Length: 486
Image 1 (cartoon, rainbow, N blue to C red):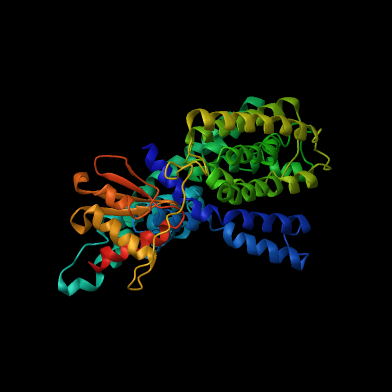
Image 2: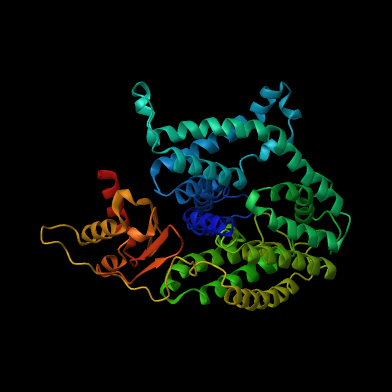
């Protein structure tokens, strides 16, 4: 199960890598024109629309990214299948369509279906598409249907399966969503403790997208709290209104960036630059704009224990801020932009104490994350099992007949593994070929090592890894060509 979650975490790196830039664009645009959201400034609308073009479609990015990452071939049809699956379920379960299915008025449709386009649905669509691709991408249909054989069959199967999933979700989704809303209403009367519980569950539910159900209870007027609206309009109680927002500032501006720094410092030497490019950009987005998804998704599946700890610390932060009645608010998210804009509002109460709290939480996040990552060897970005600490690139010689050097290496390795008769699966990570074979005794490890690769690692009865180096993608592509040609 843990390995499956780690593979899912790696799959999310592709869409997650896109998000920090989009978050910064929106944050700068909102900072330029915080009240009109671009309507009063040409530059602001340009930046906000560019960023929202990505952030507004995060579920689609995850559907495509997971479908690619969880398949062995990392093939385009898998991505298309993920997109097809997402479009099917979100269209079938859209508010207007549900009204038609249930033969009721649109205004009577459960509000859960207004939030059907979420990250959870995107990930589920990608996982289903990937599973179908891995199972059916090589199926041969009768001659009359041969056009739809193999990879072309997968999007069709995905659409059919997602119809079944849609029927199930038609009845399950409202129950789950409504249950969370009811739960939120129940804890809203617990004062500072309720704020802490809300903060914890807000983070825990982010992987599913269901945190929006809780947000509706506390931030808007579903249950009469309307924390955001009342704070910005000045209609509330100083020190109380804003309690469901204030505690997020120490986490988003200080805690998560400190966690990113800890993950960077614990990354393996050969992968520090790669880890830094993701983590530092995501940390800046969290600090400046309050958009945390790029950073949270970078470790929530790779190291789920750390994510639960992060959720608990978020709850603690909201509890502390609410207990001392330190308040600030946001209309976009709890980053520097909104802190600066809200700190002078009438209902802002000792907002600069949130910065002091943030510095303390930053220290806690950094040292706690660093200790736990090293102690338990959590596979945060830059520490994945598939990478070696001192991996060097193999430099094969080109064939005298003019073959590409990586083609020569791939051919030798594939033959030494036993070829088509023995190799059942070929995959790769950043530095290694990951292969499944029928009979490990057939593998000629000495011949593989003779190609100049740094090492060979047998990790199971039928699983073997060939450490190639950072040029592994070129070798993997040549191996895939050999399998396809044969």
